[in-house]
Image (tube, rainbow, N blue to C red):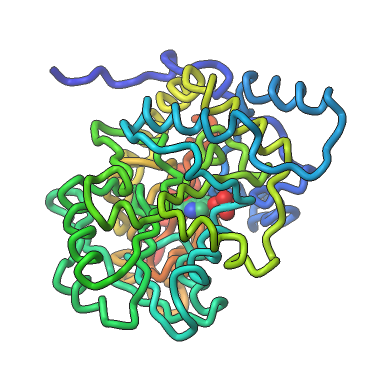
Length: 408
Ligand SMILES: Cc1ncc(COP(=O)(O)O)c(C=O)c1O
């Protein structure tokens, strides 16, 4: 039976408005602060991956309780952090971990850098599937490693992203030691299937490559697919792998700087701190309190959020399908939409072919695909109230629709 289409009346009212984020040091809102279009509109930010929704009361209450304690000394993993995460992963993703595998980290980007140093030597290669979240591309160089990139393939007929297995295998030369997997995948929103994960596991096992799976988006699945943690596979490559998760994307607490590395291999755990090279600070106590509360009591709010994100995805995908020259494969997860503008670019006179510029001129600020290794693409963050999204989509129509008519 077909699922009923969500309407605005089905959405919880908490998600229908956006508190003013100006003057809060917001990365997202400060990028375009004071920059207006030729018609005087403030450019609306649709770029970095945080949402314009308030975190749920269960999270706020936990932070208040922690601040009432009023002592904020150096803090390691709190007693409930690992056990709550263990229960959450078991309930949500059918993955049984041991709480002793959990290490608190102040961010996954930091954690990825640690794995580069833990699992490889200078000059070695770190493999990833592109396009991909920017740090996957620039961190290897900062760690004096080589970035090895294999493009994902857009199967437009099937409306899904696929792996080119021959290219992946060919890229696994002996110096490649790590596969940074982004699962679910930012920016495409792809959720890797069990078959794909097993095939990755087989390849990596054969070539001596350790999988590091960044699963920060695991609780934001928007369709019928199921998130399968890479490390939950019954496979030797899974037992050697390292996984990152966080409550930050789902419960909108990225600024609190708290994530978890799940490291089943005892030797890796022992070498972890050393691999951080003295550069990694401890996680702040509010981050632990908020993450624990989100995993423990945040599911009812998450369900309401998922309704809003599904509704917004529908709005955005429909709008993009109506604009000629741009297209997208609907994301299976995340609140990000990866928009292919190459047809539009090809139809422009040279010098007028920058989709990012066209958007900013029309008053909408997405992420530029070049940053993910794909010029000609844009990434649109739809984690905002539907009315804000609708305004953004109107500006997107202005950016591409209007230009197409006037330019032709
Ligand atoms: C795949 C992925 N990993 C990591 C991060 C950032 O994680 P953190 O803020 O914990 O460094 C993001 C943020 O968008 C992301 O999309």
